[in-house]
Structure formats: structure tokens, C-alpha cells
Length: 138
Image 1 (cartoon, rainbow, N blue to C red):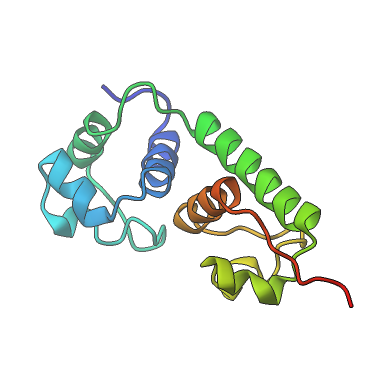
Image 2: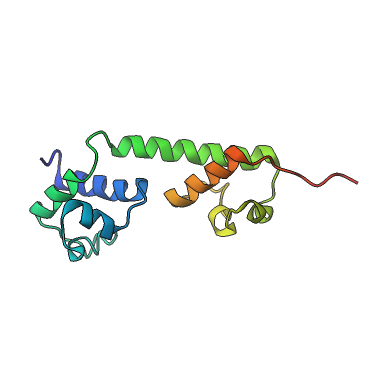
């Protein structure tokens, strides 16, 4: 059952793909669709799904999932990772030793910083389980 506008549903599908770290191909499998039906999901100018495809994709998304919830969790994660980096005094260039790719945090203190869900979750796991060892003074 499609609720809201088609644009809202498409936004929900895209948000769920990012949040659940699903590939479009995996969503197609879950929805019982051909992989061709979702191949351009990330390209709004190229993707023109049928109403039937949208219904099937919606049925593959947990009913409790909301774009707002995903956005709130994402923003909370951004704040927590920035706080961890700032409080630890780590230099961005030293984060690689903790398994964090430099590209993920290159612009961490810029307002436009927007890592993928995958990168953000990995950084949160590292921040929660890693005690930062700063070099001794002297």
C-alpha cells in the first residue's frame, strides 16, 4: 500500500537503501523484482519506476522504518563521531591507524560533511571500542 506521494515513497526507498546498507540489487531480490527495475535508483533523472515496482519495493521495507528516524540516527552519529575525534585530540591524518579511511574524515568539521552510512557506522564502532593512545610528551 503506497502512502503519501510517489516522491515521498521514492525518498523512503532511497533512505532505506542507505540506512540498511543494501545494494539496489539486494532490494530488487527482496521485492521480487528484476535487477533492471532498480538499477538507476540513485539517479533521479534516469529512474522512472512503475507503480507496481514501487509497491513491491515498499513491501520489502519494514513498516516501522521512517526517513525521519534514519535522518535522526544519522545526525546523532555525525555528532558522536565529531565529538570523539575532537575530544580525543586525534589529528585526522592519524585516524588511519584505527581503521578509519582518511577520505571518510577529511572534511569532518565542515558543515557539509556527509559520510556514507557504512563509513559512519564503522567510525561509531571504532569510537565505542577503541581507547585512543596519544604519544607521550617529551
